[in-house]
Length: 505
Ligand SMILES: *[C@@H]1O[C@H](CO)[C@@H](O)[C@H](O)[C@H]1NC(C)=O
Ligand SMILES: *[C@@H]1O[C@H](CO)[C@@H](O)[C@H](O)[C@H]1NC(C)=O
Ligand SMILES: [Zn+2]
Image 1 (cartoon, rainbow, N blue to C red):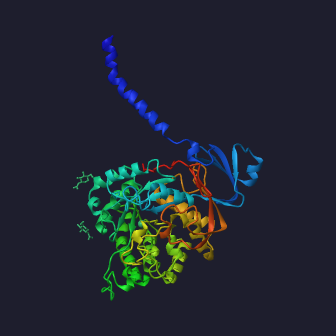
Image 2 (image 1 turned 120 degrees about the vertical axis):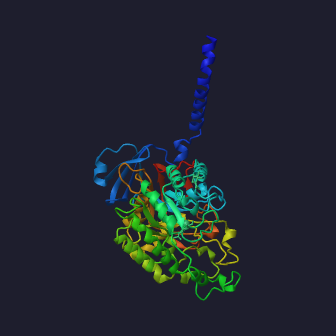
């Protein structure tokens, strides 16, 4: 008898331990009332302007268990079964939540620059329901499985919206198939690389051979490679330039140090390897995505050519290239420094044209904040200041405000900010208001104006470095839902961080 009793002990210990762990894990999970400012499992959102992939309708969206379970037009809805709670948004626009495929949240390692909690709260305030975090500016860079595990740990229970991750393609892992496979197996949604120095020491640049290797591995997983396309070229005439010189405060000096020819050279080289992504090619199934295009001239022509040749290529640009022009940037105002740089007004008009014509596929924030000290706002030295625009909470009103003169539609906004980004990142259940999808929704008033100043409740970190501070925009976000949780409502956030880390399978 004794023998039997003690013999069971080794079995009981792990059983009790695992029960205990299960209990702890579940008891620390926030309740629905902490995750949502409207804690109901089953409810309707109604409005006169609901943007679906089939057009904008007046009607209602039914949500249950975090998913969209029906979308009905006004007439059908009123006369029909109308169970559960209803939030009526009247004339406000109900659109799929924005998906930002390009954001640097700098966590772990440089959380004082942004961090998961503040970055995802800012995103929620701006109507972004999913963002994909870049593999650099955090420390360590996400270039190995070990680093990726640290990233996921840092995100757990600290994100207010859903967050996916890009891994890094760097010389160290590019020729090592097992290294790349293991990070892809661990769940990164794709890889990112640079063709020029990234500004971060543990994220060195790649050349065309690295990119070719990367694409051949990505092909098996059908995931994309995102590339920062600029290659350093010899500069003419202004090589004497010294960091301390007076003209380092002048924006035109900075602009000359990164001419459009850098983008063009990079894209020309990239397109020698994207041929592999064609049907029957060596890397069929892989996809190449060019991030933050600024040059709307030769670079764009090259991309059009590659697309018509059957290369699997897409390109994004960012709101700051569509909103600002070099002519308007004041000397010393380093808030506007980013790479590639913001170019002239004529180039900006061409970017809009390309976006309207579908040659630019989508938009992203390239939110890349830092601490104000590194922006050197007092000194105003464009050559030494940290490059990066801090903007993610304003991308919706910025795109809308500057796009109105080009006649952009709600349907186009949803395509550039939700539908196309979802396809790029492989998010099958996101990107549209459609039955079966996650209930990821933004509600906003396009007509309502807002002044971007310190008093806005949606500046969460380092407002002084925002390039939009001082501007008046049109388009106010009223509410943001992530998987059915109302995570943001007119200046207030749900108390708990209930976003989900998205891992590719
Ligand atoms: C390739 O990567 C694996 C896994 O990260 C590592 O163990 C191995 O040492 C690397 N091989 C080379 C040749 O660097
Ligand atoms: C890229 O760099 C690697 C070394 O990391 C080198 O072996 C290769 O030849 C280079 N390829 C090109 C096209 O320069
Ligand atoms: Zn970036």
